[in-house]
Structures are given as C-alpha cells and as structure tokens.
Amino acid sequence: MKRGKVLIVDDDEDIQEFLSTLLDIEGYNPLLAFNGNMGLDIALVEKPNLIILDVSLPGLNGFETCKRMRSHDILALVPIYILSANSDEKTRRLAFEAGADRFIEKPFENEDLLDMMAKDMKKKGNNSPPPGQG
Image (cartoon, rainbow, N blue to C red; front, side, top):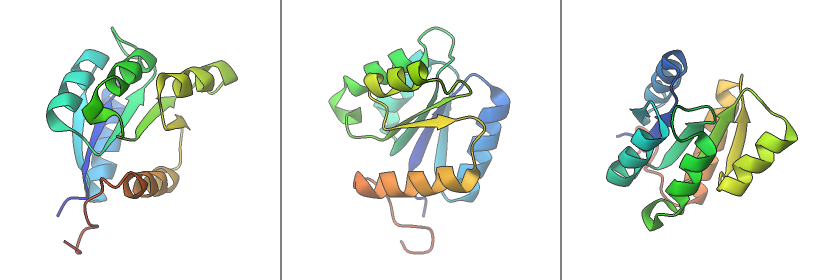
C-alpha cells in the first residue's frame, strides 16, 4: 500500500526524476507538474498528502503557487515544502509568508527530507499506513 500522494512541482526534469524515484522507492505515489498552473490544477484534482514546490517556476513562481494552493479549502492543511538553492533570509521569509510549512535548501539530505515528510504527514493526519502495515 502506498504511503500517500506527493506532488512535485519543478521545471527541472532531473530534480523531478530524482525526487520521483526516491519517493517511489520509499512507498509514496509521486505526482509531477512542470509549472505552477499545472501544479495547482493537479493538486485540486488529486488532493495530494504533501506538496513539494520549487521557487523558480515558469509562469507562477513557487511563492504565488503556494498562496493560490492555500486559498483552496481542500489544500489548506496539506503540508507544502518550498525548495530553493537560494537560502537567503528574504527567500525564506517569502516562502513562509506564502503559506509554506517548510523551506528546504538545495542540495538537501534525502533522509532529512524523508523524515520531515513522515512527521508532517502524520501530524496533519493525512498519512496512509507505512508499507507493509496496510
């Protein structure tokens, strides 16, 4: 049984492939979007258990996408992570002002990301049982 749906919104195919493979191996069901508008559309239809957003997206950037996601009741409690290679104070502040639950600096440690995801999905009460327990 899958642990939950994770929407990855990033225009970098290498990052999408890396995250998608990592999450699939860990028992998650990765969903992919290449820009903010596509990410918002998929989130509203699929109702993911967690969303990972890159800051630098074509069209709607990650901050604006996050704000729009937060404006929908069905996404209000979904953990949202904003990823960025730029970790200055302004970027972090903008991420949290947009409604992000976490700011993840690239590059990141796989285990740290997976640990945060498991905790946040459990805390929000929208996690499926771990693989082998459902």
